[in-house]
Image 1 (cartoon, rainbow, N blue to C red):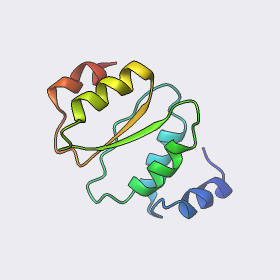
Image 2: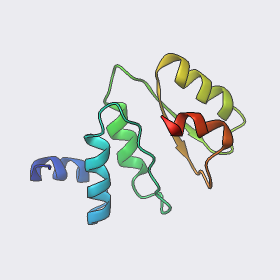
Image 3: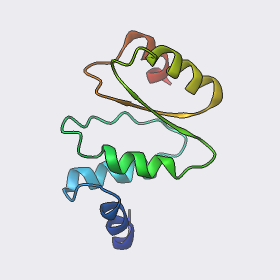
Length: 103
């Protein structure tokens, strides 16, 4: 599903070299309009994910920590203005995110 050059480029952008990370990157890269949830307990792929998502100039990237007091407003603004929102450090899915996760 991916070329060797694409995998090498991703590795250069910070993607870990293990097969699970590469498979997750393929899902993210080819997800289209779908919004995947990524579980990364070791926080190994966040550098690559920030780099990969920041390339899309049509959808600005916002990065928010789970315990940021502005979390609710950041989610609302991301939905309203079509931004890509990267939530870091989530232990569980907040109830306010259930409607977004069901889509």
